[in-house]
Length: 168
Image (cartoon, rainbow, N blue to C red; front, side, top):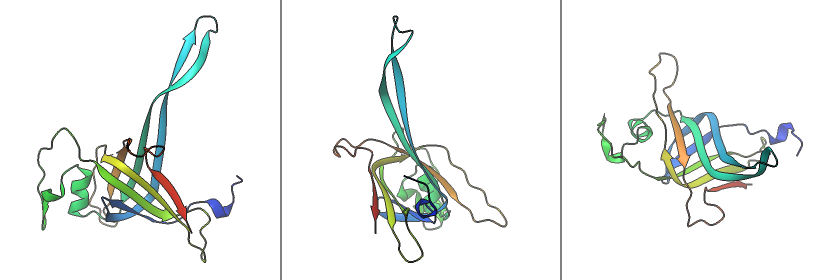
């Protein structure tokens, strides 16, 4: 497919966790598919006779512009119950992070001022995966970075890591 101005993704997106919207994206969304390839070597070739995929790592990285206490608690793998009113109780967490349904919705390639197309990323098993921090700055909004590790859902044959859907 040739690259034209009509297939460049532009615009904001929204992030939902377990069906509840947690905020608008800032600086876009990065989705990574990282296969781990292994060479099967034999002496006669002096190189790989075959390459096989050992495992796969899928992740989604974004930043939400709303730095609410609930979003901060989520980014730090705390349950919803850690936030009560205006207080976020930061405590020790168990060794197994909570799994969530992650959905990100934004403009699909081909969207114009008169025709809006939507692209939806839906993953059934995601965990907030890496360290997170935020800054309180004088002239900028406070944002919370999120890095989801997407785990396969064996009940979704052929779509174990989720779906990407474009709709008019």
